[in-house]
Length: 293
Length: 309
Image (tube, rainbow over all chains, first blue to last red; front, side):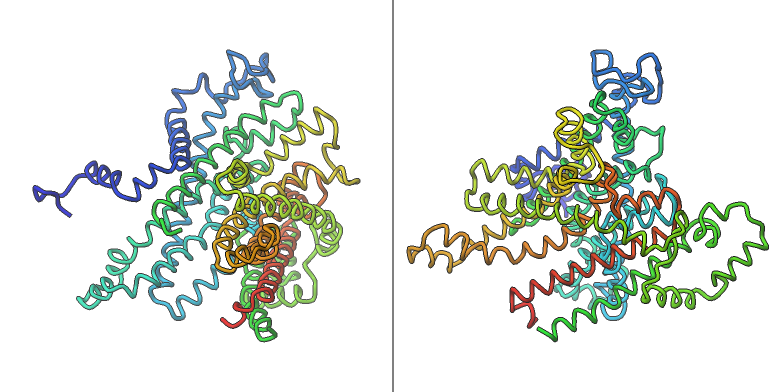
């Protein structure tokens, strides 16, 4: 594509054009989706600027200030080591975002590749790959994650592997169904007739058409991954102390109930708002990209 | 219908084999020596010769394919191994804990269906009103709020502050209220969402319009004509929700110290009791597959078009 002067638009130009496109217009008119986008942007900003936003370091202990209720000095109160809960919730955004993005990136890459190959080559490749996906889908998702952590052992890395594995079949299925529809399209047939090799066909002509549905799935998947990771950390099988993590904070905070309710309220609200944000954003993207629904 | 049932049963075989293969592989991806994985901490620090002997005794020196077939044979005979921690068979451990989980899952599912169905139906009938927005809100919160957090908040409010209900454990129906409400609420979200959209679709159909035009009472059209047909997709979601209910049960049982399979699984992972982890995972996954099969079959029984696909 070239503009009126005949030059290719730069990234900013492309972004501006995308913002004015029809799906973007539908997205911007969707109030729930905009709320979701705002929540996600706040999370990203908090995660990026955590060291500057946080009043003190999340690990600094002050045993004279143990289990202090919320006050001006400590807006979210302090935990059993006298650490600022606000600082820990702010820094927890980093781990949350990381544990949401990494499994989705891994699962998205592997799942999409599997789906592309299965849908493009069909036949035996399709049967073998998709049967393997059926096996993964046969497990309730948290159970599969627990099985992986049970085999590999608890810890952040293994929990990320577990949550990624759970996501793979979703991407594979979506990619495959789009590929099955796309491979018969005339432009793909034309490229094939012109002598394009399989790799080029897949990369240049088939892959782009999977991007819409996969983006929706990935956005919803980030919310799901954050929720699953928080669950694993809550069970003591994911992020380990002293790393500031929302799920782990809840697991420790419950020991000080009902007197220190703030230990529960703030990390839990942070998880819920984050997941809500990604869910609203994902739903909004789906409605914007697929108006028929 | 018999052909359909048979076809579905045959289709399950590769999936079930895959599940057993994955569970079998857990020993081999587990870090360290497989003997140590199977025997747990009790085998730590034993000398090389004994390790070698144990490996032979457990048949771990044989080719993997032979070991897998051996494992499959044991599983088919109902032998899931022995728990490292308790020394009891895995089957006995599961049998002890299963009733508590079934009770929790059953109560949770009842709550989920009750809330989800009524909210979904009313939202579809009163589109654009406050109850419709309430249904959307419940559906959103249900999928966004972690079940362990809503459980803990309930515990803080109803057990520790108001002291209306016991905070944890099992015994009377009062112990069941909070854990069942926690997982039920989470699952009701999907059911409400799907009921609403399915009901909205059905309400647009010609036969519903005809029924109204005939002058039938609105309640009879809404419930007799529309709801009956709108329930079809809901049946599938209820089946799928059973899986997330089981996942939710793991977290909820941990929050409320409910002595079910979920909590047993988490304890087994923490104490590196691999045979118990494997057996529980295999048992729950098989249960989930069978429940989904039953759901599909009931769906086919309700909707004859499915069978002839």
